[in-house]
Length: 288
Image 1 (cartoon, rainbow, N blue to C red):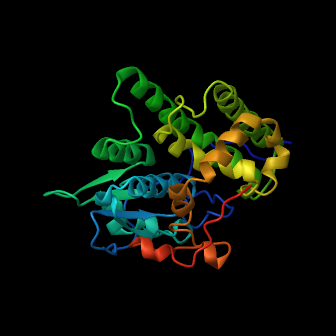
Image 2 (cartoon, one colour; image 1 turned 90 degrees about the vertical axis):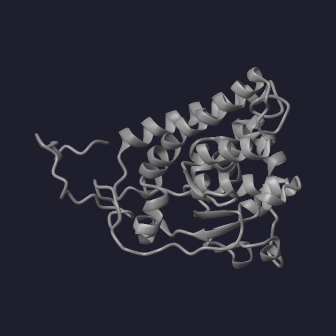
Image 3 (cartoon, rainbow, N blue to C red; image 1 turned 135 degrees about the horizontal axis):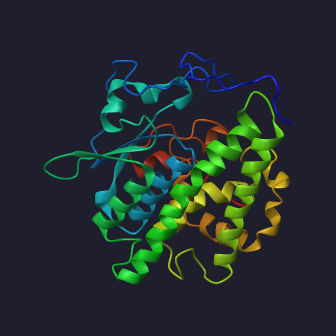
């Protein structure tokens, strides 16, 4: 169903009301809207994020590094509530001019620096600690290909399908069908690959899996975008389900998915994380 009343203007007006759940924060301009510094902890890494799929990529990566024994990967994680516009404070814009979570400050060396965009953060941490990214050129290329496949497909799943199916103020046939078809194609790509290999880049768990898991697993579990699991017939992608269930059992994944989570059951929320002790008393179960 299309809207026969809307005619795009000759020149788009930036004052157009967008409507919907995110109307209060959606603007066509960049930069800080409020002067406010970010909190700081004492660990080598400072993470500012939210437990959306892109945010979970990084907290899982950090927890996986700690699980391997890399004590230098200790981090402080602070929640950035994007619904409240906290990503537009001056402190956050300083570390990510694009005002999107997650953003990381690497304070582990003599000079601290920022890293933004979740894919870039995964690669930076993998190279820094020599983990989850092979050094062999061919294997490395395969891993990075699947990492950036996810970076490219995420907007179709989230800003495309998720927005028009779950968040848009009106439901229209064309955008929902367009992005549902693309979401299913993405699952089909992953499912066919995972029919051949245990993990996305081969038989070794890598940042390719860490990047893709937070996006694909919630569909398998049926915990994202209302009834999307049924609507998209996700149960047919049996290889993705096998892969997601195996990864969901990893201790680092179980911890990482709770960090900066501020909704749902209280025992599965962790607004801020400063040490492993913050998980005491939390429900780390993630079965589906």
